[in-house]
Image (cartoon, helix red, strand yellow):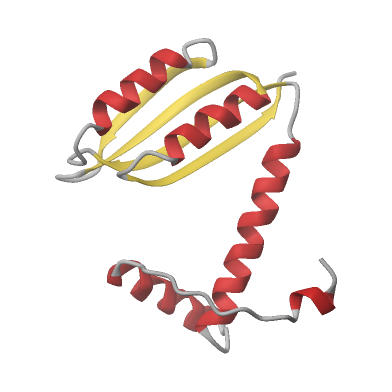
Length: 141
């Protein structure tokens, strides 16, 4: 995108939980951003770069999908089990850790075609109750 295209600003409305916004505001203050909007623009740019990098990955990969979710979210446990069965061809093993009364961390070791690993990650990301997802891959050597 050219600088000229990027300079055409558009206003949007976003609803966020207050605790998330407080944390974000703390980070943008610590990092020295002049405004919340500047921080949001930077976060969106980073999201786009990561998505484009992830989309460009191809071939056989090995990696880890880590995610945090609220296990009290209705139906999430069965949805995650169903997903893991559906992606049994790329899931090697998983580790489940209880972080507190309602949050769990899942670490899933994966291996296979990069497209299939992305598909798994995006399915997890789309589940209601999932708070954070990260796919880290490397080439199989």
